Length: 268
DNA sequence: CTTGGGACCTGGCTGC
DNA sequence: TGCAGCCAGGTCCCAA
Image 1 (tube, helix red, strand yellow):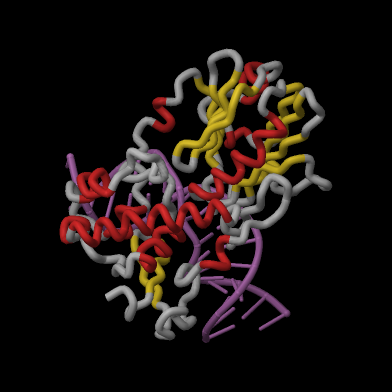
Image 2: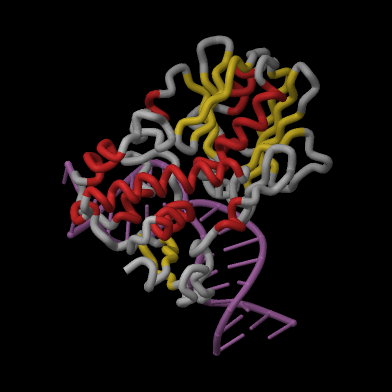
């Protein structure tokens, strides 16, 4: 599932191929992909525009276009962007051909991905919390945001309005690294514990970016290669397997209809 | 206001 | 072997 490290990797690996290029052809195979815009109008407005730059905000990929517009892509659960794929994918939802001949295909098996074409990105990404890897995301900022809520720390970490970009699997890894039980409530944490969570957020996310993301399910990089961050996972998706630190069996509980994995010994 | 839970979506897996 | 039901989870929406 594309979370911050995966979207960051996609941005980095896509940029050399498409930044500065024009959209020569736009083909949408599934109209549900496009947010509140008829497909013909989407294609008409996009064709001929150039990509000035690509950036990332949380899990959103933002293409800045030449005519003061933005193409925003959220890959949700199973979306992928592939450069010059060998074969036509049965889950292709849209494809784009650029002026340099590059062919970009958006695949999405579960069809939850969304694409916006907007003049203002504020309505799309305006409610997101701070970027956890930026310098201004300090432990004090984290503390101030967590203290306003009385919710399990796991729920807080995946709340995009509190911190942008952390999803279910990295939240579990962050809490394992911080040796913290996922049900600890946000307003019960000591300054030392918050500092430890802050350190873990940055370390886990940076490491995952260096590993080009985690290919636990459908995630692939634009060139088709897999990421390797999941080889570092200690608890995520490891129910019943021994904790790599203490050997106790990893437990799974359900939180907000999501699997939450943790070591009951290391995360008391 | 906050928090919790269901819906959306599809395919792989598990257990009877 | 067939099939029901669970599981994966980001975000939106509604209810308490």
